[in-house]
Amino acid sequence: AAAEPRAVAKIAATLTAAAETRAQQAEIARLRNKNQRQREEIARLHHDDAELESALEERDAQLAAKNQEIARLHERERAAKKRRGAADSATGSSVALKTRQDARLAEVKQEGVETTERLGQALQRQAQDAATIQLRAGQVQRLREKLQEVETGMECAICMERVADTALTCGHCYCCAEECGSSIVATCPECDRPVTGRTKLFGDVFSVEGLADV
Image (cartoon, rainbow, N blue to C red; front, side, top):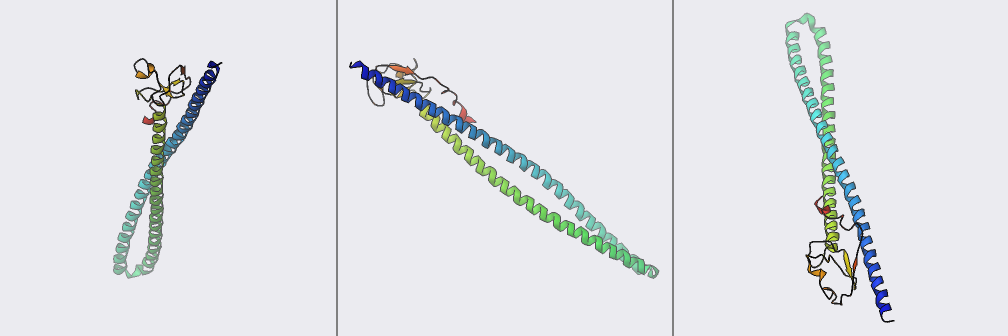
């Protein structure tokens, strides 16, 4: 009759340890999925940043071409002035040419202003994307720290090398490997209760090893 309460307590402790292990496994799976989504988001932001850099280079080239066009128009304007002074008979046509050149020059200048505005907007978006990437990197770092905390909570408290996969009678868990002193302890190192039995815990508790290095 006295053994029955101990057996019930042992079963309850085993069930509690198993429930805690399952909860840890669920938390690890959730954290792994969240980490994967954030890594994909960071990869997408890097890809968008590369595309933006390419677009900026292309727009810089367009702006340089516009500046060259403006220089050519100025040169043509100076040449036209010389021709107007040398040929009075061509005054009417020179005025018309000057009018067309002025109109074209105004168009090119306006295009240059618009290109400069677009470049400024693109640089602003690039700065915003860089800030977003930095924020994502901080979130990933905090996620890694959380995973490290979970892993540390599952380590054997004696050898600090293996996963605690065996529950003692009191409910505390150790690895109980032959190389670890926890396999021969007579009392629990944490609560000092006598060890009357050990229960092997099963599940994907080893799947977090190396996850913090991602």
